Image (tube, rainbow, N blue to C red):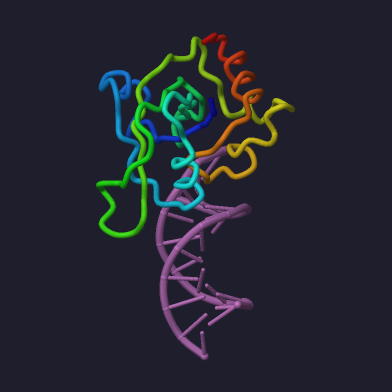
Amino acid sequence: MNYWLVKSEPYVFSYDQLVADGRSIWEGVRNYQARNNLRAMKEGDLVLFYHSNEGLEVVGIAQVITEFYPDPTAEKGDWSVVDLAPYRKLARAVPLKDIKATPELQNIGLVRNPRLSVMPLEAGEFQKILEMGETEI
DNA sequence: GCCAACGTTGGC
DNA sequence: GCCAACGTTGGC
């Protein structure tokens, strides 16, 4: 089991939209590092869902339901997508400022490389954010 | 709306 | 292959 965090601008695609749709293709990644992270995802992996630009908080957990395949929206280039389904909404959203204020979370991509849209998390980091979100899985 | 950080592009 | 210029992202 691996753990991840993805970012989405909520006015483009929010966690609530994922819940409403039941599942979603995670399309449009055009960054090699983010793509490689997508490709490392395994079915069943859990993915924290972060709202960028607006909200600026981790709002829920998604699950990888289909491992990577070619991005149908890519006209050229070697890009990949996965399919995600909603897993559980956090009881309490975890704001970026709280993450930045938490010593155990100083190494995650949100803090170290704010522009990366798909990033791995250590199990301990994932668990810490769940605790902050008052959520158990 | 600004701007810093980062990634990509393209001229040499 | 280097590096300057440019574009994009995303927090503030």
